[in-house]
Image 1 (cartoon, rainbow, N blue to C red):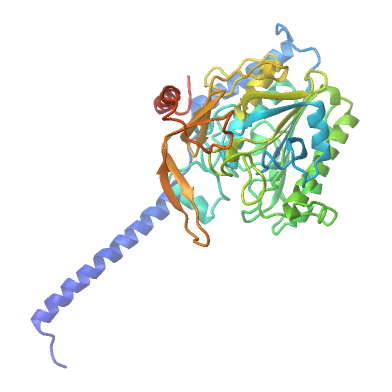
Image 2 (tube, helix red, strand yellow):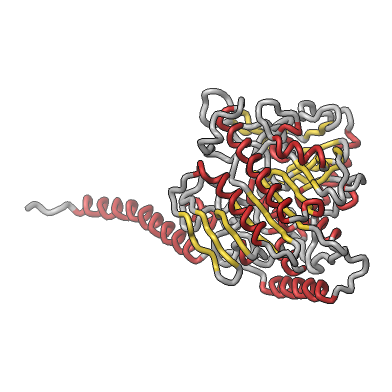
Length: 499
Protein backbone atom coordinates (compact mmCIF):
# COMPACT_ATOMS: atom_id res chain seq x y z
CA UNK A 1 0.00 0.00 0.00
CA UNK A 2 1.58 3.31 -1.05
CA UNK A 3 2.47 5.72 1.75
CA UNK A 4 0.70 9.07 2.17
CA UNK A 5 2.87 11.95 1.00
CA UNK A 6 4.04 14.24 3.84
CA UNK A 7 2.35 17.28 2.31
CA UNK A 8 -0.97 15.47 2.16
CA UNK A 9 -0.55 14.31 5.76
CA UNK A 10 0.02 17.91 6.76
CA UNK A 11 -3.14 19.15 5.02
CA UNK A 12 -5.21 16.26 6.37
CA UNK A 13 -4.08 17.13 9.90
CA UNK A 14 -5.03 20.76 9.36
CA UNK A 15 -8.41 19.72 7.97
CA UNK A 16 -9.02 17.48 10.96
CA UNK A 17 -8.20 20.38 13.29
CA UNK A 18 -10.50 22.74 11.41
CA UNK A 19 -13.33 20.20 11.58
CA UNK A 20 -12.67 19.37 15.22
CA UNK A 21 -12.92 22.95 16.48
CA UNK A 22 -16.59 23.54 15.60
CA UNK A 23 -17.49 20.04 16.78
CA UNK A 24 -15.77 20.69 20.10
CA UNK A 25 -17.47 24.07 20.34
CA UNK A 26 -20.84 22.47 19.67
CA UNK A 27 -20.22 19.82 22.32
CA UNK A 28 -19.13 22.46 24.82
CA UNK A 29 -22.15 24.65 24.08
CA UNK A 30 -24.48 21.67 24.43
CA UNK A 31 -22.93 20.71 27.76
CA UNK A 32 -23.06 24.33 28.97
CA UNK A 33 -26.72 24.70 28.06
CA UNK A 34 -27.61 21.33 29.59
CA UNK A 35 -25.81 22.09 32.84
CA UNK A 36 -27.27 25.61 33.04
CA UNK A 37 -30.80 24.33 32.53
CA UNK A 38 -30.33 21.39 34.89
CA UNK A 39 -28.98 23.49 37.74
CA UNK A 40 -30.92 26.71 37.18
CA UNK A 41 -33.50 27.48 39.78
CA UNK A 42 -35.26 30.69 40.55
CA UNK A 43 -34.07 31.93 43.92
CA UNK A 44 -36.37 33.04 46.72
CA UNK A 45 -35.45 35.84 49.09
CA UNK A 46 -35.06 34.37 52.56
CA UNK A 47 -35.22 37.74 54.30
CA UNK A 48 -38.47 38.61 52.53
CA UNK A 49 -39.84 35.16 53.29
CA UNK A 50 -39.24 35.87 56.96
CA UNK A 51 -40.91 39.30 56.75
CA UNK A 52 -43.86 37.75 54.91
CA UNK A 53 -44.30 35.21 57.71
CA UNK A 54 -44.05 37.96 60.34
CA UNK A 55 -46.63 40.11 58.53
CA UNK A 56 -49.15 37.28 58.18
CA UNK A 57 -48.63 36.38 61.84
CA UNK A 58 -49.36 39.99 62.77
CA UNK A 59 -52.58 39.92 60.73
CA UNK A 60 -53.69 36.77 62.57
CA UNK A 61 -52.90 38.37 65.92
CA UNK A 62 -54.73 41.56 64.94
CA UNK A 63 -57.80 39.61 63.88
CA UNK A 64 -57.75 37.60 67.10
CA UNK A 65 -57.40 40.68 69.31
CA UNK A 66 -60.43 42.39 67.73
CA UNK A 67 -59.05 45.78 68.85
CA UNK A 68 -58.77 47.45 65.45
CA UNK A 69 -60.31 50.90 65.27
CA UNK A 70 -63.33 50.99 62.94
CA UNK A 71 -63.06 47.25 62.36
CA UNK A 72 -65.96 46.02 60.22
CA UNK A 73 -68.59 44.31 62.34
CA UNK A 74 -69.98 42.15 59.56
CA UNK A 75 -67.13 40.88 57.42
CA UNK A 76 -68.18 40.19 53.83
CA UNK A 77 -67.60 37.08 51.80
CA UNK A 78 -65.37 37.79 48.81
CA UNK A 79 -65.67 35.97 45.48
CA UNK A 80 -63.52 36.74 42.43
CA UNK A 81 -64.41 35.20 39.06
CA UNK A 82 -61.68 35.63 36.48
CA UNK A 83 -62.06 34.65 32.83
CA UNK A 84 -59.17 33.84 30.52
CA UNK A 85 -58.99 36.06 27.38
CA UNK A 86 -62.54 37.41 27.61
CA UNK A 87 -62.82 40.65 25.65
CA UNK A 88 -64.44 43.86 26.82
CA UNK A 89 -67.19 43.50 24.23
CA UNK A 90 -67.92 39.79 24.69
CA UNK A 91 -70.73 40.25 27.23
CA UNK A 92 -74.23 41.64 27.10
CA UNK A 93 -73.67 44.39 29.67
CA UNK A 94 -71.07 46.02 27.38
CA UNK A 95 -73.33 45.81 24.33
CA UNK A 96 -72.84 42.37 22.76
CA UNK A 97 -75.99 41.14 21.01
CA UNK A 98 -74.63 37.88 19.59
CA UNK A 99 -73.62 36.33 22.92
CA UNK A 100 -76.22 36.01 25.68
CA UNK A 101 -74.90 36.50 29.21
CA UNK A 102 -78.06 36.96 31.32
CA UNK A 103 -76.50 36.05 34.66
CA UNK A 104 -73.65 38.53 34.32
CA UNK A 105 -75.99 41.14 32.87
CA UNK A 106 -78.25 40.85 35.94
CA UNK A 107 -75.27 41.32 38.26
CA UNK A 108 -74.10 44.28 36.17
CA UNK A 109 -77.53 45.92 36.39
CA UNK A 110 -77.55 45.58 40.17
CA UNK A 111 -73.86 46.28 40.69
CA UNK A 112 -71.15 48.67 39.57
CA UNK A 113 -69.65 48.35 36.08
CA UNK A 114 -66.18 49.87 35.85
CA UNK A 115 -65.92 51.05 32.26
CA UNK A 116 -62.22 51.92 32.49
CA UNK A 117 -60.87 48.84 34.24
CA UNK A 118 -57.49 47.53 33.10
CA UNK A 119 -55.87 44.14 33.52
CA UNK A 120 -52.31 44.67 34.85
CA UNK A 121 -50.70 42.87 31.89
CA UNK A 122 -51.74 41.76 28.39
CA UNK A 123 -51.01 38.06 29.04
CA UNK A 124 -52.24 35.72 31.73
CA UNK A 125 -49.52 34.84 34.25
CA UNK A 126 -48.15 38.37 34.83
CA UNK A 127 -51.71 39.69 34.96
CA UNK A 128 -52.78 37.13 37.56
CA UNK A 129 -49.65 37.64 39.66
CA UNK A 130 -50.20 41.41 39.67
CA UNK A 131 -53.90 41.14 40.51
CA UNK A 132 -53.35 38.76 43.42
CA UNK A 133 -50.34 40.59 44.90
CA UNK A 134 -51.30 44.23 44.27
CA UNK A 135 -47.90 44.68 42.60
CA UNK A 136 -47.14 45.07 38.90
CA UNK A 137 -45.59 41.99 37.32
CA UNK A 138 -41.95 43.20 37.54
CA UNK A 139 -42.48 43.89 41.26
CA UNK A 140 -44.14 40.51 41.77
CA UNK A 141 -41.30 38.77 39.96
CA UNK A 142 -43.37 37.03 37.28
CA UNK A 143 -43.04 38.80 33.94
CA UNK A 144 -43.30 35.74 31.68
CA UNK A 145 -45.65 32.82 31.26
CA UNK A 146 -44.42 29.63 32.98
CA UNK A 147 -44.62 26.32 31.12
CA UNK A 148 -44.91 22.79 32.51
CA UNK A 149 -41.68 21.81 34.21
CA UNK A 150 -39.30 19.90 31.95
CA UNK A 151 -40.92 20.90 28.67
CA UNK A 152 -38.81 22.56 25.93
CA UNK A 153 -40.32 26.00 26.55
CA UNK A 154 -39.70 25.65 30.29
CA UNK A 155 -36.06 24.85 29.48
CA UNK A 156 -35.92 27.90 27.23
CA UNK A 157 -37.22 30.11 30.04
CA UNK A 158 -34.59 28.67 32.36
CA UNK A 159 -31.80 29.21 29.83
CA UNK A 160 -32.67 32.89 29.52
CA UNK A 161 -33.13 33.20 33.32
CA UNK A 162 -36.79 34.07 32.90
CA UNK A 163 -39.04 33.50 35.92
CA UNK A 164 -40.62 30.05 35.92
CA UNK A 165 -42.86 30.52 38.97
CA UNK A 166 -44.17 33.13 41.36
CA UNK A 167 -41.51 33.89 43.99
CA UNK A 168 -42.50 32.44 47.34
CA UNK A 169 -41.88 35.71 49.15
CA UNK A 170 -44.83 37.35 47.40
CA UNK A 171 -48.00 37.89 49.47
CA UNK A 172 -51.31 37.03 47.81
CA UNK A 173 -54.86 38.02 48.64
CA UNK A 174 -55.47 34.47 49.87
CA UNK A 175 -52.48 34.69 52.26
CA UNK A 176 -53.85 37.84 53.87
CA UNK A 177 -57.48 36.75 54.03
CA UNK A 178 -56.62 33.35 55.47
CA UNK A 179 -54.53 35.05 58.14
CA UNK A 180 -57.49 37.36 58.78
CA UNK A 181 -59.69 34.32 59.46
CA UNK A 182 -61.31 33.68 56.07
CA UNK A 183 -61.91 30.23 54.70
CA UNK A 184 -60.05 30.31 51.38
CA UNK A 185 -60.55 28.18 48.28
CA UNK A 186 -59.65 28.25 44.60
CA UNK A 187 -61.11 26.62 41.51
CA UNK A 188 -59.52 26.76 38.06
CA UNK A 189 -56.37 28.01 36.38
CA UNK A 190 -53.39 28.89 38.57
CA UNK A 191 -50.59 29.34 36.00
CA UNK A 192 -48.00 30.80 38.34
CA UNK A 193 -45.80 27.75 38.83
CA UNK A 194 -46.03 24.02 39.41
CA UNK A 195 -43.15 23.33 41.80
CA UNK A 196 -41.05 24.50 44.77
CA UNK A 197 -44.16 25.36 46.77
CA UNK A 198 -45.25 27.98 44.24
CA UNK A 199 -48.65 26.30 44.11
CA UNK A 200 -52.05 27.47 45.39
CA UNK A 201 -52.12 25.64 48.74
CA UNK A 202 -48.74 27.21 49.60
CA UNK A 203 -50.10 30.71 48.90
CA UNK A 204 -52.98 30.90 51.32
CA UNK A 205 -55.60 28.67 49.68
CA UNK A 206 -56.92 25.99 52.01
CA UNK A 207 -58.48 24.11 49.12
CA UNK A 208 -57.64 23.95 45.42
CA UNK A 209 -59.10 22.21 42.41
CA UNK A 210 -57.97 23.06 38.93
CA UNK A 211 -54.95 23.17 36.67
CA UNK A 212 -51.53 24.74 36.81
CA UNK A 213 -51.56 25.84 33.15
CA UNK A 214 -53.44 27.18 30.16
CA UNK A 215 -55.65 24.67 28.40
CA UNK A 216 -53.38 24.66 25.32
CA UNK A 217 -50.43 23.30 27.30
CA UNK A 218 -49.52 19.65 27.64
CA UNK A 219 -50.02 17.61 29.68
CA UNK A 220 -53.33 19.26 30.62
CA UNK A 221 -54.17 17.60 33.93
CA UNK A 222 -56.39 18.65 36.82
CA UNK A 223 -55.08 18.78 40.35
CA UNK A 224 -56.72 18.74 43.78
CA UNK A 225 -55.19 19.67 47.09
CA UNK A 226 -55.55 20.87 50.66
CA UNK A 227 -53.21 23.05 52.65
CA UNK A 228 -50.75 20.93 54.57
CA UNK A 229 -51.59 17.80 52.60
CA UNK A 230 -50.10 18.70 49.23
CA UNK A 231 -51.65 18.57 45.79
CA UNK A 232 -52.14 15.58 43.48
CA UNK A 233 -53.34 14.88 39.96
CA UNK A 234 -56.96 13.73 39.99
CA UNK A 235 -57.75 13.93 36.25
CA UNK A 236 -55.05 12.67 33.92
CA UNK A 237 -54.36 13.92 30.40
CA UNK A 238 -55.92 13.87 27.92
CA UNK A 239 -58.82 15.53 29.74
CA UNK A 240 -62.16 16.06 28.03
CA UNK A 241 -62.40 19.84 28.10
CA UNK A 242 -66.03 19.83 27.01
CA UNK A 243 -66.75 19.00 30.67
CA UNK A 244 -64.54 21.75 32.10
CA UNK A 245 -67.11 24.54 32.60
CA UNK A 246 -69.67 22.31 34.36
CA UNK A 247 -66.92 20.66 36.43
CA UNK A 248 -65.55 23.98 37.67
CA UNK A 249 -69.08 25.13 38.51
CA UNK A 250 -69.72 21.94 40.48
CA UNK A 251 -66.45 22.31 42.42
CA UNK A 252 -67.23 25.95 43.21
CA UNK A 253 -70.69 24.96 44.43
CA UNK A 254 -69.16 22.28 46.65
CA UNK A 255 -66.55 24.63 48.10
CA UNK A 256 -69.27 27.19 48.88
CA UNK A 257 -71.54 24.57 50.45
CA UNK A 258 -68.72 23.17 52.58
CA UNK A 259 -67.41 26.56 53.74
CA UNK A 260 -67.80 27.03 57.51
CA UNK A 261 -70.66 29.31 58.52
CA UNK A 262 -68.61 30.85 61.32
CA UNK A 263 -65.98 32.20 58.90
CA UNK A 264 -66.13 34.59 55.97
CA UNK A 265 -65.37 32.97 52.61
CA UNK A 266 -62.83 33.91 49.95
CA UNK A 267 -63.38 32.00 46.73
CA UNK A 268 -61.26 32.56 43.61
CA UNK A 269 -62.68 30.99 40.44
CA UNK A 270 -60.22 31.33 37.55
CA UNK A 271 -61.59 29.86 34.34
CA UNK A 272 -59.51 28.45 31.48
CA UNK A 273 -61.91 29.75 28.82
CA UNK A 274 -62.40 31.44 26.38
CA UNK A 275 -58.66 30.82 25.90
CA UNK A 276 -58.08 28.48 22.95
CA UNK A 277 -58.62 25.65 22.23
CA UNK A 278 -62.36 26.13 22.63
CA UNK A 279 -64.64 23.35 23.83
CA UNK A 280 -68.34 23.41 24.57
CA UNK A 281 -70.38 20.80 26.41
CA UNK A 282 -73.14 19.16 24.34
CA UNK A 283 -75.81 21.22 26.11
CA UNK A 284 -73.81 24.40 25.38
CA UNK A 285 -73.17 23.79 21.68
CA UNK A 286 -75.02 25.75 19.04
CA UNK A 287 -76.71 28.20 21.38
CA UNK A 288 -74.91 31.39 20.37
CA UNK A 289 -75.02 33.44 17.20
CA UNK A 290 -71.27 33.95 17.69
CA UNK A 291 -70.37 30.32 16.96
CA UNK A 292 -68.24 28.14 19.20
CA UNK A 293 -66.65 31.13 20.91
CA UNK A 294 -70.07 32.44 21.85
CA UNK A 295 -71.18 28.99 23.01
CA UNK A 296 -68.18 28.84 25.36
CA UNK A 297 -68.86 32.31 26.79
CA UNK A 298 -72.52 31.46 27.33
CA UNK A 299 -71.35 28.33 29.13
CA UNK A 300 -69.17 30.53 31.34
CA UNK A 301 -72.22 32.66 32.09
CA UNK A 302 -74.02 29.49 33.17
CA UNK A 303 -71.28 28.88 35.74
CA UNK A 304 -71.79 32.41 37.07
CA UNK A 305 -75.47 31.64 37.56
CA UNK A 306 -74.65 28.46 39.45
CA UNK A 307 -72.14 30.23 41.69
CA UNK A 308 -74.62 33.00 42.47
CA UNK A 309 -77.28 30.41 43.36
CA UNK A 310 -74.82 28.65 45.68
CA UNK A 311 -73.90 31.95 47.34
CA UNK A 312 -77.56 32.78 47.90
CA UNK A 313 -78.07 29.37 49.44
CA UNK A 314 -75.16 30.10 51.79
CA UNK A 315 -77.28 32.99 53.04
CA UNK A 316 -74.87 35.94 52.79
CA UNK A 317 -75.33 37.12 49.24
CA UNK A 318 -76.19 40.71 50.14
CA UNK A 319 -72.92 40.90 52.06
CA UNK A 320 -70.79 39.26 49.39
CA UNK A 321 -68.35 41.31 47.32
CA UNK A 322 -68.51 39.53 43.96
CA UNK A 323 -66.04 40.65 41.32
CA UNK A 324 -66.10 39.47 37.71
CA UNK A 325 -63.39 40.35 35.20
CA UNK A 326 -60.83 38.99 32.71
CA UNK A 327 -57.06 38.54 32.83
CA UNK A 328 -56.49 40.28 29.47
CA UNK A 329 -58.14 40.98 26.14
CA UNK A 330 -59.26 38.45 23.51
CA UNK A 331 -56.83 36.38 21.46
CA UNK A 332 -57.81 34.93 18.07
CA UNK A 333 -61.54 35.46 18.45
CA UNK A 334 -63.63 37.72 20.62
CA UNK A 335 -64.43 41.42 20.71
CA UNK A 336 -62.06 43.73 22.50
CA UNK A 337 -62.26 47.48 22.67
CA UNK A 338 -60.35 49.84 20.42
CA UNK A 339 -57.00 48.82 18.98
CA UNK A 340 -55.08 45.61 19.62
CA UNK A 341 -55.67 42.23 21.16
CA UNK A 342 -54.14 39.95 23.79
CA UNK A 343 -50.39 40.36 24.15
CA UNK A 344 -50.20 44.09 23.40
CA UNK A 345 -50.59 47.17 25.55
CA UNK A 346 -53.09 48.88 23.25
CA UNK A 347 -56.59 49.05 24.72
CA UNK A 348 -57.74 45.75 23.22
CA UNK A 349 -55.06 43.86 25.14
CA UNK A 350 -55.76 45.19 28.63
CA UNK A 351 -59.08 47.09 28.76
CA UNK A 352 -61.46 44.38 29.97
CA UNK A 353 -64.95 44.03 31.54
CA UNK A 354 -65.41 44.45 35.28
CA UNK A 355 -68.37 44.09 37.63
CA UNK A 356 -68.36 44.74 41.38
CA UNK A 357 -71.56 43.46 43.02
CA UNK A 358 -72.11 44.00 46.76
CA UNK A 359 -75.73 44.92 47.54
CA UNK A 360 -75.03 45.89 51.14
CA UNK A 361 -72.34 48.42 50.17
CA UNK A 362 -72.27 49.27 46.46
CA UNK A 363 -75.00 51.11 44.58
CA UNK A 364 -75.87 50.12 41.02
CA UNK A 365 -74.33 52.21 38.30
CA UNK A 366 -71.46 52.73 35.92
CA UNK A 367 -68.16 54.46 36.57
CA UNK A 368 -65.59 56.01 34.22
CA UNK A 369 -62.90 56.04 36.94
CA UNK A 370 -59.50 54.54 36.08
CA UNK A 371 -58.85 51.31 37.97
CA UNK A 372 -56.52 48.35 37.54
CA UNK A 373 -56.31 44.77 38.75
CA UNK A 374 -53.54 45.67 41.20
CA UNK A 375 -56.15 47.65 43.16
CA UNK A 376 -57.94 44.56 44.45
CA UNK A 377 -55.64 43.66 47.36
CA UNK A 378 -55.26 47.25 48.63
CA UNK A 379 -59.04 47.63 48.44
CA UNK A 380 -59.64 44.51 50.53
CA UNK A 381 -57.07 45.69 53.07
CA UNK A 382 -58.95 48.98 53.26
CA UNK A 383 -62.37 47.33 53.58
CA UNK A 384 -61.12 45.08 56.37
CA UNK A 385 -59.09 47.83 58.07
CA UNK A 386 -55.86 45.85 57.76
CA UNK A 387 -52.35 47.27 57.32
CA UNK A 388 -50.39 46.73 54.11
CA UNK A 389 -47.17 44.70 54.22
CA UNK A 390 -44.53 47.10 55.57
CA UNK A 391 -41.57 45.74 53.62
CA UNK A 392 -42.77 46.17 50.03
CA UNK A 393 -44.26 48.74 47.70
CA UNK A 394 -47.82 48.25 46.50
CA UNK A 395 -48.58 49.47 43.00
CA UNK A 396 -52.33 49.19 43.46
CA UNK A 397 -54.45 51.65 45.40
CA UNK A 398 -57.65 51.21 47.36
CA UNK A 399 -60.75 51.81 45.27
CA UNK A 400 -63.09 51.43 48.25
CA UNK A 401 -64.28 55.02 47.78
CA UNK A 402 -64.40 54.58 43.99
CA UNK A 403 -66.78 51.66 44.38
CA UNK A 404 -69.06 53.97 46.33
CA UNK A 405 -69.16 56.70 43.70
CA UNK A 406 -65.80 58.38 44.23
CA UNK A 407 -63.12 59.21 41.69
CA UNK A 408 -60.09 57.12 40.83
CA UNK A 409 -57.16 57.13 43.30
CA UNK A 410 -54.79 57.01 40.31
CA UNK A 411 -53.30 60.10 38.68
CA UNK A 412 -51.88 57.78 36.01
CA UNK A 413 -51.94 54.10 35.10
CA UNK A 414 -48.87 52.17 33.95
CA UNK A 415 -49.01 49.58 31.15
CA UNK A 416 -46.38 46.86 31.50
CA UNK A 417 -45.70 43.98 29.13
CA UNK A 418 -43.03 41.34 29.82
CA UNK A 419 -41.40 43.64 32.34
CA UNK A 420 -41.25 46.64 29.97
CA UNK A 421 -43.18 49.85 30.59
CA UNK A 422 -44.97 50.38 27.29
CA UNK A 423 -47.35 53.27 28.00
CA UNK A 424 -48.88 55.51 30.65
CA UNK A 425 -52.24 57.25 30.75
CA UNK A 426 -53.97 59.86 32.82
CA UNK A 427 -57.68 60.55 32.94
CA UNK A 428 -57.74 61.74 29.34
CA UNK A 429 -54.50 61.01 27.49
CA UNK A 430 -52.35 57.96 26.87
CA UNK A 431 -48.66 58.16 25.94
CA UNK A 432 -46.98 55.20 24.28
CA UNK A 433 -43.20 55.13 23.95
CA UNK A 434 -41.57 54.33 20.63
CA UNK A 435 -41.90 50.56 20.40
CA UNK A 436 -42.26 47.94 17.67
CA UNK A 437 -45.79 47.57 16.34
CA UNK A 438 -46.85 44.45 14.46
CA UNK A 439 -47.85 44.73 10.80
CA UNK A 440 -49.30 41.39 9.57
CA UNK A 441 -50.16 40.83 5.93
CA UNK A 442 -52.21 38.05 4.35
CA UNK A 443 -51.14 35.37 3.53
CA UNK A 444 -47.59 35.96 4.84
CA UNK A 445 -46.91 33.84 7.93
CA UNK A 446 -44.24 36.07 9.44
CA UNK A 447 -45.40 39.59 10.42
CA UNK A 448 -43.28 42.71 10.27
CA UNK A 449 -42.43 44.56 13.46
CA UNK A 450 -41.66 48.22 12.96
CA UNK A 451 -40.69 50.81 15.55
CA UNK A 452 -43.42 53.43 15.77
CA UNK A 453 -44.03 56.43 17.97
CA UNK A 454 -43.85 57.93 20.44
CA UNK A 455 -47.60 58.41 20.24
CA UNK A 456 -50.10 60.42 22.25
CA UNK A 457 -53.79 59.49 22.16
CA UNK A 458 -56.85 61.40 23.36
CA UNK A 459 -58.79 58.60 25.06
CA UNK A 460 -62.03 60.58 25.21
CA UNK A 461 -62.15 61.63 21.57
CA UNK A 462 -60.21 58.64 20.22
CA UNK A 463 -60.66 55.52 22.40
CA UNK A 464 -59.55 53.40 19.46
CA UNK A 465 -56.02 54.91 19.55
CA UNK A 466 -56.18 55.76 15.87
CA UNK A 467 -54.51 59.18 15.81
CA UNK A 468 -51.24 60.39 17.27
CA UNK A 469 -51.67 63.95 18.56
CA UNK A 470 -48.21 64.39 20.09
CA UNK A 471 -47.37 67.18 17.64
CA UNK A 472 -50.66 68.91 18.42
CA UNK A 473 -50.25 68.63 22.20
CA UNK A 474 -46.47 68.47 22.73
CA UNK A 475 -46.65 69.72 26.32
CA UNK A 476 -48.94 66.87 27.38
CA UNK A 477 -46.75 64.36 25.54
CA UNK A 478 -43.67 65.74 27.31
CA UNK A 479 -45.43 65.62 30.67
CA UNK A 480 -46.45 61.97 30.30
CA UNK A 481 -43.02 61.07 28.93
CA UNK A 482 -41.53 62.54 32.09
CA UNK A 483 -43.89 60.38 34.16
CA UNK A 484 -42.75 57.33 32.20
CA UNK A 485 -39.07 58.23 32.55
CA UNK A 486 -39.47 58.68 36.31
CA UNK A 487 -41.17 55.30 36.63
CA UNK A 488 -38.45 53.59 34.61
CA UNK A 489 -35.80 55.18 36.82
CA UNK A 490 -37.63 54.07 39.96
CA UNK A 491 -37.91 50.50 38.66
CA UNK A 492 -34.25 50.41 37.62
CA UNK A 493 -33.25 51.51 41.11
CA UNK A 494 -35.57 49.09 42.97
CA UNK A 495 -37.13 46.57 40.55
CA UNK A 496 -38.84 44.40 43.17
CA UNK A 497 -40.02 47.35 45.22
CA UNK A 498 -38.54 46.41 48.57
CA UNK A 499 -38.53 48.98 51.36
